[in-house]
Picture: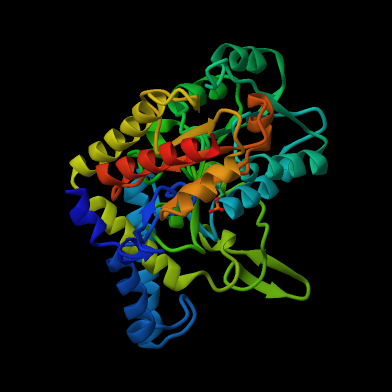
Length: 402
Ligand code: PMP
């Protein structure tokens, strides 16, 4: 079944130096099915116009297509209202907008708790917010098996003046999953806001933001089979409406005069300027693709991840990091005594694409006491053959590196 799926992704059907591409870097960006490419192409060819502004028919068509995707996203993540969906350029912009927008709500001495395994995109904006407001960023510790330390987190909530909790839904390095529902409930009991980075969860989990109980949820289209250049910041209306806009200008206003400007309503208030229109259309096609996938496609993907974990665990030269049965999407490892980059280069010589480095998670690397690691990650198109080829190439690398 996954081989049929693979055929839908043009970029996966190619060879590199005579080897068929084996793409195990979906956590960095997913490949795009033909229907996403076709939706974007046909929008530019037939419907292209700016949204919201003009009275003409083409603009009305473009606006309707653009707003329809907002409605689909509302359904997709179980939001209460479409105007809680803000289009951004991706997770990084979503979290920056959020941290900027909260500036006047934070004060000297307030604490922002941040997941120690977070991506830099979910750390640096909070550090900048702390600089602007006098608040303090405090990391939430991890347990020895690299999961969030719930007891330490509860203690932090009990003893510190926590205003914001910033969590990853799924770690982009380890694939470990945070129980957002439980962690949100703990934070809400103390009156803190909960901001979740869903970049690595959105393509793999059925996300329902209301059930998760968080206040904000960010993700990128390009990690969910859609195009790059677009992402989403979701916020519950009450909290989203309090955010100050980071970007100001056209589209986000109600009235402008040299005596002063009145901002418009959500969602426009947080979408200044011409949005990434065709990328939103592509994201709409990606949502349709995901919604039409049979549930077995996701079961298969999870099996492929578990198979990767098992096969790696059988190699004595491999050090696995934070591998748990319930992880999502990615597995992190090193070859003992070898540099992660060397492993990546050797695999690439056989057409196998994995990621090596610190994965924009330097604090996590510091906790793990490594400079970097290899990460193999899966999507719905990953096949058993991909895993076999990866393991064989890794065994070759082990032999070669001696
Ligand atoms: N958070 C996580 C967990 C990620 O994996 C990524 C992408 N690597 C980001 C944030 C940043 O996403 P983007 O580059 O699409 O803004």
